[in-house]
Length: 559
Image (cartoon, rainbow, N blue to C red):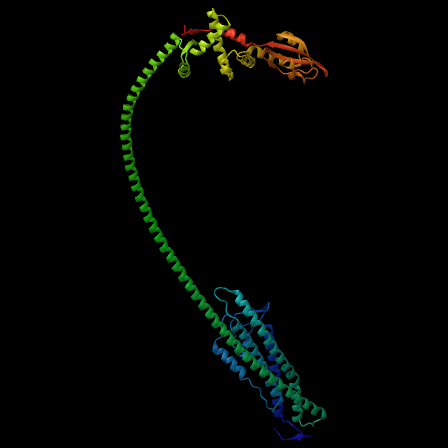
């Protein structure tokens, strides 16, 4: 370089001017290359979905990989420890030239180094993101993968934005000031004088250089901080990996323990099952054995019982035969004795007419018949009492009257038994008893079937609307009128049964000892009651006795 100066400004030779031009052209080509790389990087930015990095196995732009000089890491591969150390050393050894020789060279070097550093930082941030994000486990736990990617994405976004902002400041400064510095230096070397404007631009240049130094220093400190953060995150990642391995080992150990416990429990269950089966088999065998023994014992007991019963039955049969023969002999002897005694007692009563208290008491338990009829027998003392009553009150010399009296006594006794009446004092001729028997005969359909059926038919025809008088005259035994007043109501037996009848009202059948009545009211006032009636006669006690006596069979032992 020549030492010629014009107005204190160093004049450049032709060779120096050509070199400066080459530097300017080289810086311009470097800027274009850097811009191309920036554009490629911006176009190849990692896409995010909801704050989570999406990783790709291959680099989109091989020019960026070659320019940066870094190896792009597949998101599925984990970065080795040696690569992490090399990255940190590269970040640490980044140096900036502070020489004041050529402003253009200095600015270009700063810009290229800053650009390379930014690319390396972005590359490291990306590699850090790829290292921090753990690979997807075989079990497919997507939740851990999404959380790790989200955390790494937020940290890398902050670092990347800071680095881009610093590189943009350096790029803006270099692109504006490089040309200005080259221009001013070319002016100095050309020998032109230093004008106030040029001096001011030189002062601005110095200020800009200071500013650039500060920015580079700040960038360097930030890069160191980022490196420290990177190492810290790597350490945290290692801790996480270790914890993950410990957790996996612990899970494997727990699984192994659980598996061993399951196998142990299964083995214990199988052993218990075998024990239960053996116990069950033993119990079944014992049960079968006991069952056979019980069956055999039952058979023996039944056989013994059968033999015992047979022996007892034979003994009992033999004893019964002996007892029966003895009993029959005793009974036969007793019966013969009883018959003899009864015959003697009957003969004494019937032939000798013995009448004492003892004989009357004995005759209540051992009846001696005096008369035998078709309806039964008449006891000796009843026959004797009836005979004496008849001979005293009716006819002393008429034996036929005594016979009829005996038959009447039998008939009345049968009616008393039939109606469940009591003979007062043993006298069948009592008036109250006779009246009660007569009333019962009126209701007895076996004795008065004809009369009862006829009065029922008359009642049905009257109820159907036929004329009361005509029906009464045609089918009744008699038809008449009767008036009941206060003077004679007590004398008429059925007055209380008809007093409530209204005019033209017909009463029900009224049963009386003499027969059957149906009344119709034709007049009614406070003092009298006018009634029309139809009457059907019933068989009386005397008629029934007279009809029964005819043809009645009687055999007397007393005469």
